[in-house]
Image (cartoon, rainbow, N blue to C red; front, side, top):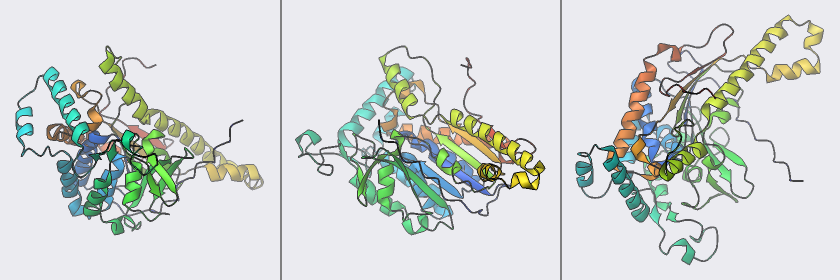
Length: 399
């Protein structure tokens, strides 16, 4: 019989924080997806311009890096710092010549070849300020978790980038903004969150959240080693919902991999779809499950109000009362839909043109979403959870 996994810890309760919405808490959740993360920067830029500031930001992998840049800077500096990071990692080092000639090509087949060429260059030379190829390669290194034998790339440059772009004192001031990043313990296989409500956050926590093997080696924190949280769960949604703070909450869930997709017609399409299925956060299934749970909780709250005092005082009723949640939620989903030419390397294709396209797509989807004012209005009546998605095409087949 296998040993049972310990129960997953819940997030600490979140106190209400002032914000310019009708909600007591505003959460921004950023999924992993490598080079696709510029989409999240575009989404945040629109929220920033609209005056919608998160009181809690949580991320996985590249979402952890974007989260750290946002939480680790003053509001007026965040967009500039995000832009600095994304322009740095998309710098081809050729004074913009590749961006110039690539911008003149619009045919999808040609774009596909160009994107694959750019991704190949990344594999060969790494990404500025992010990671470099290991020399010697891992198969020539002596065995060991920190000898270079367990990864193809060295992510040491990312530490310097984070220390330059992120004020960790600001991140660790949880009175200003709650901050969480997820990773997985290599030895136990258990998912873990590093949260400024309980932990002193440093660059190593952000790097651990993005240490996707075998590209990057595990990151040691205290006496444990951690890999990319996307190996277990690519969204912080469950962590935020587990806090049980009883706060009316507005959640912006920004996903970089779509759970929905087309049936592949060749091996390249299979590779793309496999990654989408593997790393999509299955947001709709999670939010639908949460909505059903909230309906049960709301029903019990109504029943509890009608109970005689002696019945309400029973252990069973008190247990159900503790599990109930009087809060209401809006969950706003923004899911990136990649162009067909991006291919299976889209998560490590860091060319400047593609980065700008991802950023613009995030802006476009966020602007489209905020044109619907209902996303900022708390649910009323019997409805305790509203789920909005104005960017994902409707399914042709409901199965």
